[in-house]
Amino acid sequence: MTSAALFDLSGLNALVCGASQGIGKATAQLLAQQGARVVLLARNREALEKVRSTLTSPEQHLCVAADVSHAVELDSALENILSTWGTIDILINNAGGPAAGPLLEAEPSAFESALHTHVLAQLQLCKKLAPAMRSKRFGRIINVISTSVRIPIPNLGVSNTIRAAVAGFAKTLSQELAPHGITVNNVLPGYTETERLSALAQASATRSATSPEVIRENWLKQVPMHRFARPEEVAAALAFLASREAGYITGVSLQVDGGRIGAI
Ligand SMILES: NC(=O)c1ccc[n+]([C@@H]2O[C@H](COP(=O)([O-])OP(=O)(O)OC[C@H]3O[C@@H](n4cnc5c(N)ncnc54)[C@H](OP(=O)(O)O)[C@@H]3O)[C@@H](O)[C@H]2O)c1
Image (cartoon, rainbow, N blue to C red; front, side):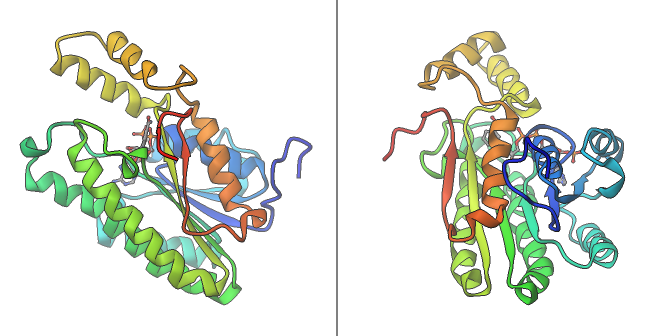
């Protein structure tokens, strides 16, 4: 463990989905810095390899290119991971959020796609990885979702719907797996400075015939800290929940939002 370590994750294998950019990338970097061996998973292999080269001890980590919404592809990726490493101790469920837009303008296909990417992928990942966690009597499953599970976000109809399903799934699973030493938690990022935030600002600006800068300024007004999160700040919450020290915390949804959600 380096002197900068928050938690000692040495001896633990982590699978970080959506690791090629944004919150997933920052999480892979932090978990590796804390001593974990990391599988980086996303669709773009080249981007994953670039991230891997930035990790502490790059040679001990693995890149796996797969689309989590594609069941056959995900299954073969997981077989490959398990045959290489045996077990995954820490699963970070994370992928791109659904497109913005009013609920009634969304096509059923957008819901189906989000269901595959977020709920069915989560089910498949957990079914495949939980048995080895149960045998070890240790596991950490953490979902990156959104503050919309507390207060739905206007203009994110598909996302609001699907995130609620993920939160319900996670709470149920946390109770089923608690007797086996496996915790299941959610991290709810607020506005976080990533490629997704830029895309949402641009989409919102186009829709309302204004500039992304104006949209960003309006968003900032909702955040008591008056700044957006850095991906590393969201990653820090994920690393804590992934740690051995967080072993008695399960079934929670931890907001990392600069104080934006006004609920107690
Ligand atoms: N940024 C924010 O302000 C914010 C706020 C609240 C919630 N969130 C949520 O937090 C999560 C992460 O956010 P982010 O800002 O880091 O997102 P991001 O910048 O869009 O990154 C998403 C990551 O997921 C991967 N990905 C997307 N679809 C995938 C698929 N089908 N299979 C495998 N990998 C996939 C992407 O890589 P590839 O394209 O290479 O697959 C990328 O690495 C998202 O669900 C987002 O909606 C973000």
